[in-house]
Length: 254
Image (cartoon, rainbow, N blue to C red; front, side, top):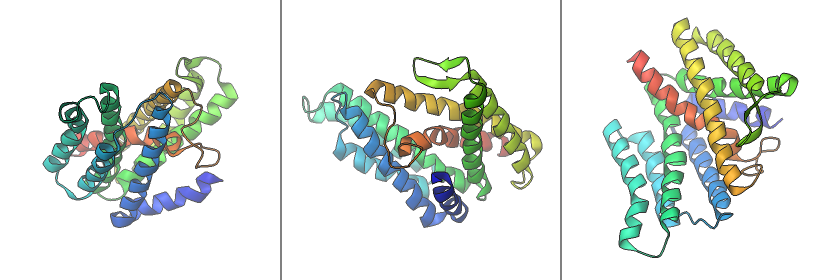
């Protein structure tokens, strides 16, 4: 029910681009930041708010409007800024606080910005592919794992992930990629390649977020989306997949 309620709105924003998409990405980054701060707070880690907050705003706006070199410079500057706190305000925050502030900026602002960069590569179809392929993998993995899952994929990170679910997610993702290659004006080979990239990085993104949750000793990052948990639980794979697909399409499409 949550997917049926929110999915069409997200797809509409991706198709429209501009301010609607910026608003959706900004909301995802803001809510994800709040969840991440809460998770890390359980381990007495303080994300530096006057660095991370403005840094996320800079990264999202630069991804929307700046050129490639300015975007890259903004990314490096925001990621280095927490380290400079150790020089300008020694003893105020620990080095661990600074390191996780860098993680928050890179994870949410950096990867989130690639949702906007991906929309700018061509028409809306490249971003729509990222969304639909990620959802296809998640759905295929979930139902395959529920039906046939036996062998654990990464029990130290996520007890529910299985190799059978991974295989089912890959199969569904590749099927959807093949079906959408034509409407997206891609060759079948390029479409299937996008499916493979999306499947692998969606799973890795999910496991990466599971590592953070395991570190914080919680099951879900939040509860804002009924049936899905928090924003990070829903967008963990998409964030990494969007970055990977951006690089993939830049390479194969020129």
